[in-house]
Length: 134
Image (cartoon, rainbow, N blue to C red; front, side, top):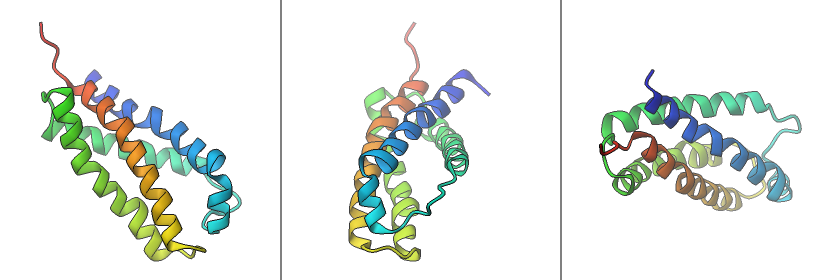
């Protein structure tokens, strides 16, 4: 595994975990409780495992499709691909399958979270794969 690849994985995991934790379990905790979507005993290791798998997948995809792009172009291209895809499997499918007090409320808050998450991680992953001029 190259250092770039490892940095890209970390560029996804390191900001995603605290952002997700603070968003879902601190700042908007009452909102999510009102949605009645979360179990009382959230299994944080499953969340971390999910982030690790996603980080590896996104690093691989970025390395194959966008490596060598400028940070700006890489960020925009990656975000244009990754954010809608993530939104589809992290927001839409959950809204379709799970009981909750408000599907609209869930889609709204999770769409905001997904947008913020990819606003943060996309440039970091792009930075991991940017070629240095020498």
